[in-house]
Structures are given as C-alpha cells and as structure tokens.
Length: 469
Figure (cartoon, helix red, strand yellow):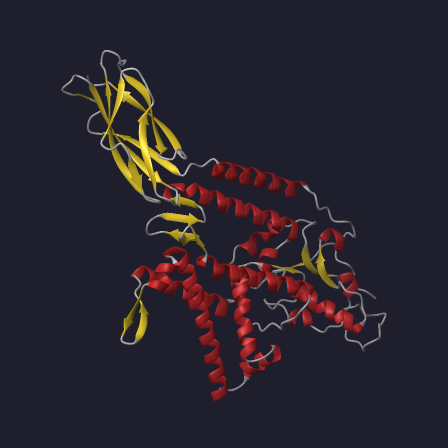
C-alpha cells in the first residue's frame, strides 16, 4: 500500500554544522537540462563578449571608476547619477521577488553566476577524470603520479578560467584598451604595465572565482547565500517548486523491469535523483534550502521512468496546491499582482526619466565671499560659478545666456565654452543690475545653457541680490 500522503510538502532542515563533503554530480541530459545549459553558457558568453563591444569609438559598456564616468552604449552617467544605479538595483530585486513568487528559485538553477561557474569547473573535472563514479573513485585512490598530474591539470585549468574571469571583470572598469594595450617587454616576455589597483583587483577576483567555484561550490548556496534563507517568505501554495510525489512514489523499493508490485510505489530506489543533484541533496526528503531548482532530478527521474515503463512526473515542477490538495494552481494572485504593479511603476518611472534626461548638467554657485558689490559705474555686481558638464559622448560647444529681465545684464569671460565628451568646466560669470531698476532684496534669475547645434538646452534658477548695499 502507498504511504500516507502528507498534508503539506515537508521541509527538510539543513545541518549548518555538518562537515563539508565534496559533491560529484552525475551529468544528465533532458528537457530542463538542455534549457539550463543553453541559458547558463549564453549568459557566460555575454559576460565575456560585452566588454569588447564598441560604440562611437569607445567601449560600449565601461564603468570608468577612476574618472567617475560610466558609459552604457549611448548613455553617459556621472557619480551624481547614482540614483539610476539605485533604481536599477531596486527593479532587479523586485523582479527577482516576483519570479520567485511564481517560479521559485529558477534564478539559482538557471542564471546564478555561482551555479554557472560551478557547473563549468565540475565539467573540467569530468573532462580530466571522467563521470561521477570515476571522480569518486579518484578521490579515494592513493596518491600516485597519475593522480598528481590530473590534479595539477584540473587546478591549472581552474586557475586559467579564474584569471580570464578576473580580467573580464576588471575590463568593465579599467577598459579593454587599457587592460590589453598597456603591455611592456621585459626581456623577450610581454608583461602588463598595470597600476596597483588593477593588480589588486585581478588578485581578488581570481581568488574569489577559484575559491567559490573550485572549493566552496554548493556550500555557497547552503551556508552563505542569503537568498536561500528568505525564499520561504516569498513561497506560497502556488509557487512552482521541484517536488517528489509521495503518494505515487511511496513506499519505495527495487523491482525487476516490467513488473509493478502492488505493495510498492513507483520509486525504484535507484538514487539517480541524488546522484545528479549539484548540491547533493535527496529531493525525496522534501523542500530544502539547498535545492536550487535546477531540475536535474526531474530529467534523471523521467529517464528512469521511461526505462521501467512508468509514467513521467514522479519528480516534477509542481505546486503545493496541486501536489497536496489536488487542486489547480492559481497563477493570478494578489501577491504576484502587487509585485507586477510595483515593477510597472518603477520601470515606467525609470524609462520616463531616461527618455527625458538631457545629457547636459549645470550647477550655479554664488560667490561665498561677498553676496554683492558696487562697481565703478555704480552697478550692483553678483558673481557666480556656472559648472557645465557635457554628459554626451561627443564634443559640444555651449553658450550661457540670461533670461531677459529689466535692469539685469550678463557678462562672460568667454562667449562659447567647448567641452569634450564627459568634460566639466567651471565658468565664472557676473550679472550686473541697475540699482534704479532692480528691486531691493532678492530677484529670481534664470541662466540657460544651450549647445551650439541647439540640440541640448538646460535652464536653472538662482537669485540676484542687492543685500549689503
């Protein structure tokens, strides 16, 4: 007879003090694994290729921290535009929350960098040593010249992959032109002529990649990553999760091919679901924080079910409402709509701001030493510093004008201010007021900066004061 169906999907607790055991997953193919591999390595390829893309003669995506200029294709951002980064981070977080509410931890299984690099490093082990059983046997075998050589080869390939990863990360900041163009010859050997901060960054990223993907692996997901901890807060009965069908599978037990003993469930105790799991858990024990929902166990179990002639889906993507309560899942629910509404507002606001953003910034600062003074002609003089910042990726010439106002006139040192892409310039200006016309106290003024081609125009308000006169 079948085991009694639990009234909810059990949650298996993780022993956080458990001794670390190296997991050697078996590589499996199938519907979900094909999607997973394509997704992971497409993202990896994008990460490696993007720094090499060019736009307007410059690296298309370049976070030039030393000069505090950040280029994303045709857009240039400065440090004061940090709110765009904050907005993007908030949108990313809410997107992750919404996806988690609907589809669980698909980010972990299909797109997380830790998952991608761990899979890559494990594949290197498979290429050098062999599949799961050979790797386990290799670990237990006594030390020999062959074992030392294979270990060295694995560690060397890992190191090369870590260096490539680190160099790509740093290329987003230092720029590919600098990273791969500033080399010098030491004897007959080319050597990079990098500043200290680049060398330190290379070391940190190389060490972190090697340690996380080569050594920490699944421990990052179980012990360190906070996402696995708070995922349960976002899960509900209609969240898609990878789960084992207890009613159908229990009690477990081996059997001969072609037989279907009435006292046994469909689980033949082959343990393939455990062997293919990248974090080494048994999905049959229930929902666990270490499950990254990669669905390797789903593909492995479906393959076994096909071989023994049982229906697929003993382990599958399902929901607690479907599996336990035997009711249809509710795709459209208040929590999902709430996240969707917030995301719509955030994305709409960010898009509106970006579309209406003028890549020209001005800042007007008054002379702090003296609010106003009287010149030889008896005119009231106010001095200002107008800071112009060209946020475009092209050179432009700008002109400053004062909005016409009775009794006020503008005096400039230069009529035109040419600025290179991303360049800033502090322009001293003076505004003169006729004491017989200008009212006493403070008078609002408007300074306008216009590009020579008329494409960009920005105005900013300040005050003209007669105080102290």
